[in-house]
Image (cartoon, rainbow, N blue to C red; front, side, top):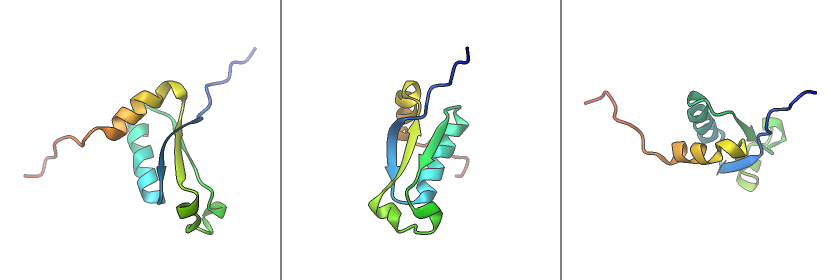
Length: 81
């Protein structure tokens, strides 16, 4: 019998633009947390719909606490003086 991986179904953030959503998703991906973006903007043809239906960042329920902590943590030190 096959076991299915847990579904990505817990919304942890919403975004009004795609750039911020992709940056947040990249942070999670870099830390080994699977995520997905759910958009309702006619396949990108009507990006103004993102104001009415924000982009949702979803993760597995088991990863949700760690994901929120990662996104809420301040950035680390930089190498710039």
